[in-house]
Length: 148
Image (cartoon, rainbow, N blue to C red; front, side):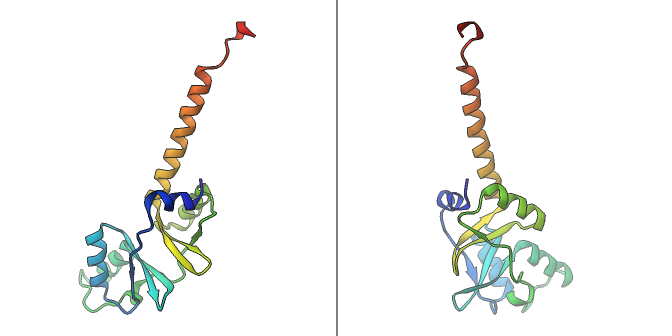
């Protein structure tokens, strides 16, 4: 299975924020849409990612106060990205190695969407479940040894 198939199944809803935007506004968008990340865009170009992990770190450092903190103060610069032709198992391996929960999917310089670790886990599970059913069906229909 390829990353493009995950995007096709989950849709391409994309939520972004500006680097000079306030973290509080970004948190409100994330909470409202029940998402864990925002792509940071500056003049149509991806410049980073903001995830709940960076927000929690900022809250911890600032005794629970975000105040006037800006997105570019805590965003991840140069986040891990994926292309549509990447195999999902390879993406899973890299996400585990880099401890990345959210990965922007790009085609050249065009941002197509974001794939979460949950999306990857679901795709792998569904693919393995399908293969398991096919193997069980194949074994069930295996010719008897005495028929050969």
